[in-house]
Length: 405
Image (cartoon, rainbow, N blue to C red):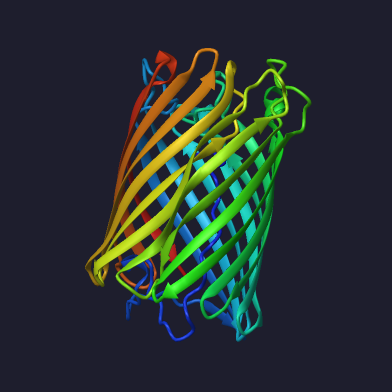
């Protein structure tokens, strides 16, 4: 599982759709399926959903190495509990999850991640919304993460992540306003990684204009402050920095076949350490979903922005990611999905370095009844890089079953 160390520029939501619009699910995988829908446990107005996935996963390159790949068969269990409570002017959601991975050959790679989240959406007025969210994750760093410090003789790095978000939105007849703020703290449990511990403060403000339904135009400014807990990293560099930027773009309401938003702009990276150079770059963030038919959805995603780095010799890092996903309901109880993505990672420094990661994934899921849903998933990833040690090729095959109560 990938570590959440990639901090791409976050965009705030465009103006909500009008009250008379009837939004449809963003994916055909979420369409109602009479006879196969899960039956939550109801306690008054509160709905409790229990789910667990159990699978066998084959990984052709556990360590994501460029030479002598080590394969393994992994037992994976993913339990999850979700709780929802909705009323006229309030929606509450909470969840607890875990993922346990047991390797059959490479025992030190066995690990467990877990977390919990809670969110609330309030409607204090007819045209206003207030959102709050908090989350804790105990994550396991992926061996393929660009920032990983390779030591194959030690277990994968464990990270405690704590975060919170607060948002406010106002929707007028043609003008919409939004304000968002957030905080994240990353704490590496391994003593050798303590220089990567940091706090992130972020905020954004935007205005959207809706000249005619269903199109909205928006402009938003954003700021991110990174504050590493140690004064310098293992190379003696102060990695604290501030990023400022602006995005402008267009959004389309969710009631049509084409919906989503796309913004482009610029960002400015300003490090605190005088030994590091600032950088101005092109920023982008967006997602567009096209539904040519009710049972088909194609979703394109793009993002580009400044990303935190502690890599030796790098002054800063910029990531560009492009992805395409297709969701298809082949039959009422037979669901298909496939996705392709490309990630370009550019390190600026005395000797610039780059990585390009290409990934493919496909999944088929059969709903046997309300409770059981067997599935098969296949994946392929390849990374090319200037440094030979950063390159890898990996293939995965997973067979499992989802049980919902």
